[in-house]
Length: 189
Image 1 (cartoon, rainbow, N blue to C red):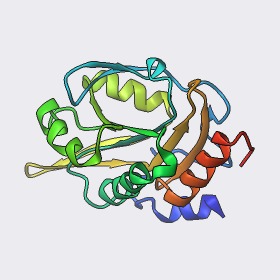
Image 2: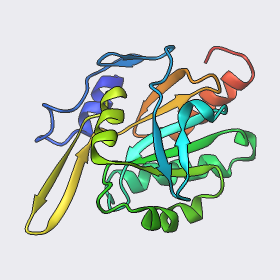
Image 3: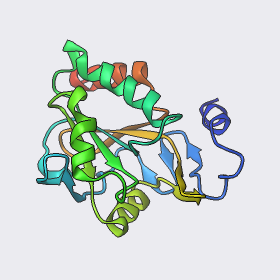
């Protein structure tokens, strides 16, 4: 059923680059294994490394100009950050559009999300490398000066030890909340 739900949101022109979801793994990225580590620049201009965070984080890939996929998903993640029961949780938003998502644009974009939201950017090569390490597919499409980035829509819940505990098509707010609270309580969701 999860595969069907995820497949329903995949644009028809993208099947060659979208990872296939198999339960708790997508093409080589398995839940329960260490999250691929990476370093990027945050929206404050500082170096940011996942392995140095030492707190639970939802990793989400997107870009600030994305209105159809990213904005609804980020709205759900913003509600999670406002939930008092989830005070330890943070969000790392990795821009797939380093050309347009400059640190200044990311700083403006990140403001409404609060202190536990970090917008990240890097070189195109590093962004592609990190996306590949997370089995996230994306492709840039530019026509007549308009650029769109088509990408798979997954959020990854990484615990304080840097282990991917869950992945979610579409940044499922309820499921992330429930899984995070169960992990925090020491229960297997």
